[in-house]
Length: 91
Figure 1 (cartoon, rainbow, N blue to C red):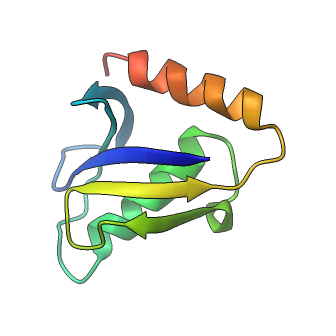
Figure 2: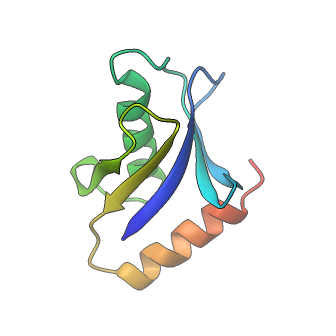
Figure 3: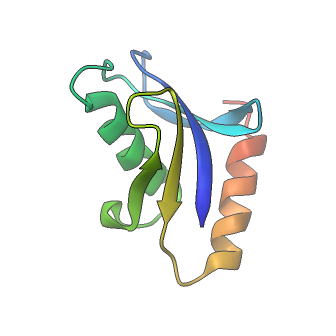
């Protein structure tokens, strides 16, 4: 399953939830230096979706705040419900 995310580096705390222009918002404490924010975002998405970090990989947007990640999961319907719940979360 592919998910469009919007990364907000340098946040006071890491959180996943809400939407920005239809993308899942992922706020991370790491700064956007040497890919640190991207890796932190991938880890945060994995944790929020209750999958292993190796099941989440970057597809597009290595140097952009807007990214596309791919999540491998056997229970795709359950995963879609989890993503929908996170998109609706206010914070």
